Length: 88
Image (cartoon, rainbow, N blue to C red):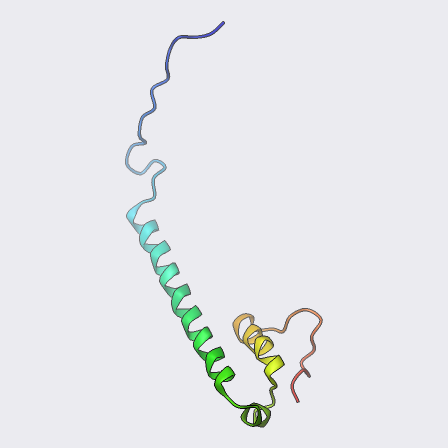
């Protein structure tokens, strides 16, 4: 048996299902914080990549270790399988 009644779709009332202004502001602030963090992180990696091999060796890194140094600074630990003695 098929009903011929069409269900009316209505918009939810204020505060019922739509994001409130506080939630939108919180989300935007989190996004801005993430963008700032990414820009700082990428700037630091760019500085390391701009150094010549002798300067990198002075701080105990090689070009191959720059990515691991970035990972360690971002997450506070080295990738799985790497020990803390990866630098000279």
